[in-house]
Image (cartoon, rainbow, N blue to C red; front, side, top):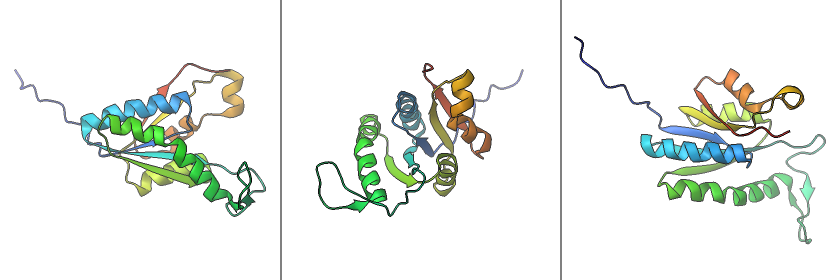
Length: 162
């Protein structure tokens, strides 16, 4: 009879959680916060903003209600970090360390670059669960990250939306 050896703990110390502020992203963050609590890991919550063609980070914009013009990147960063406060509150409610990161660029390469830069042990992300034509035309960011990532990717699926 062999000795029953307890399974090894997964050595997750840094968990990257990309967010687009969707229901799927919130579900992924909630699961990641629970896992981070169990494993003593830190969360890095990442939002990647893609610019429309013809715009650059240095494009000057005016906020609603007037005021001085600001760089598009600075405006987008301020708005994103304000939205991410809900993410911080969710992680802190579980007593988990969280860092918020904003990046301007293409989503998939930026997620993979941040995972490498922060030595992430796992990427936890939501997926919209699209199928058929919606999947064909919009593709799946989660699927592309999963295919290209050198670290494990845990996806959290929510009900499909048309």
